[in-house]
Length: 257
Image (cartoon, rainbow, N blue to C red; front, side):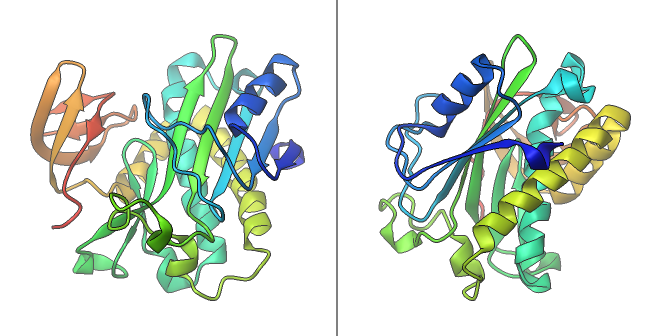
């Protein structure tokens, strides 16, 4: 069971993904690697992963073939990670704040400035997920969650774009990190079972939480920029813009309505 995954924690490390990859090479799976400081983390492409003290940085690695996940369904594993994070956040946040979590396709977590319904007018990034699939069936998630760090300490270009969990919920208990990680593994395993049996339910849950849905967005794809109305998430996990489905790209949409 995933809750019994090998756990390694470091005070300071170059990258949790590096250690996770080594554990995968050694066959020590599943594994969860956490760190208090990360000196060489990376985001999508060649971007540097801002990793301040107080940010929860962790990598989760496992063999998808041991959980009945076929190669065809593996693109939805990013969605599984995002959904597990949202549900785990819901267990440590107040009911009102739990409703403020949204998923930015394909796999980032955003928080709305206001709670519920049509009142949202501004969203800030809380968490980023980098998913890698290896040829042998191993899947690696590198996750950075703004937890105890303060946005005021972030680089100037990020201050207005991100938020931390302790700012969303100022009275978080001191043991919230461990509670979150335990819940994350539990929900991840539940969603894995759902992905194996009913993948359309994963897409439906993503569609319900998609922050871009109903907004005009600009998606940078390998074929060029696509501008149009986001209609939500397709059954196979792609994003629907106007009447077409896209499976890769980066959305630079304005998070204000």
